[in-house]
Image 1 (cartoon, one colour):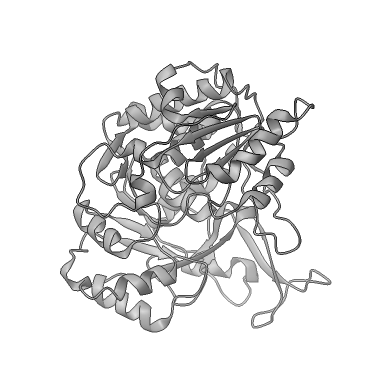
Image 2 (tube, rainbow, N blue to C red):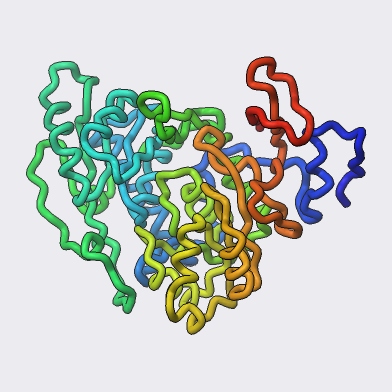
Amino acid sequence: MPPTVDAHTPLHLRHLAHWPPHAPQHLALPEGTLYDNVLASCARHPDRAYLIYYDTAISYRRFQDETERLAGHLQQVCGVQQGDRVLLYLQNSPQFALAYYAILRANAVVVPVNPMNLADELAHYVDDAQAQVVITAQDLYPQVQALLRQGRAAQAPGHGLKHALVTAYSDYLDAPTTLRVPDVIAAARLPLSDDGAVAWVDALSAARKPGPLLAQADDLAVMPYTSGTTGHPKGCMHTHRSVMYNTVARGVWLQSPPDAVQLAVLPFFHVTGMQNAMNGTLYQGATTVLLPRWDREAALQLIERYRVHGTQMISTMVVDMLSHPDVDRFDLSSLRSIGGGGAAMPEAVAGKLKALTGLDYIEGYGLSETMAATHINPVHRPKRQCLGIPIFDVDSRVVDPTTLAELPEGEVGEIITSG
């Protein structure tokens, strides 16, 4: 039962009156690393599909094997050592998840980069993160090419890009599909001629074995960059422990079952997509159905085809999906959870979604600095156009930005959050 909350309860604890009945107030976290989640899920469900990509299923067994092979390439060919930063510059794809966990298996640090960034922007990430290795796709490789050539030509051994691992998204189109596959995804693999650039399939086929897993829970794991509203984007330094928090929290808060199927339409380079549909699903040993870019027709087909349990969509995606002229002909009865953030969900759209699916849109709030959500609406009592309440072990207050004094209800100030 929720604790008794009255007028004498401190402001920062009053949200406990609306605490989900199923959820503990304290979240117990595993002490291991993020890669330990790969080992655990593979041991429990080796033949279960972790990823489904245009009807191609990638099992946990295959996922672990390929992350090990790629980690061996990073260490033995690219010289990646513990704590090194590796740029991950890809669209949503099996390769994104594989590369993410291969970097971690190599005891290194993932630096996810928005695939819409161009060469000049990418140069900032290379310099700021001191990255010498990038994992990318052939459609983005032209943005990398000049930086790789400059880095290889530099006299200083530690300066600039030295290695690029390049994939074609079609490398994982193994099964026939009736889904509409974008041209950039279906494109055949192109040859590489630059010194330092290696094809993904060649790195896999070499089957190099990585060294021991040395990372610890408090070592740096992922460094997403902020949007850079004041100057250049800035890296947010997250340890395995801080990433593990939201990896675990999502499933507990939303009561996601371990055999759930999640639809991934939010980008993995951003913390919301990364934590909900990639890391959180892997931790549970569940299944993620992937879309590289938003496509309402494909999203509706996939929900029906794979009996999708939950998904995170920003409000504009929901608007577009509900505007599909034949939305009523799709079977969406498997959905148990749909939510997101970034902008308030319009009242009329939330009502239409509720009428179609019977579900409330669960809104939340978080930051790159907090590795996704710090506030989520309680599932049993969501409030429309509200960011929710602080989740497990989060202390969040509204304060005067000058004095830092906590403000009373109804006052406008700055949000400060600890968790």
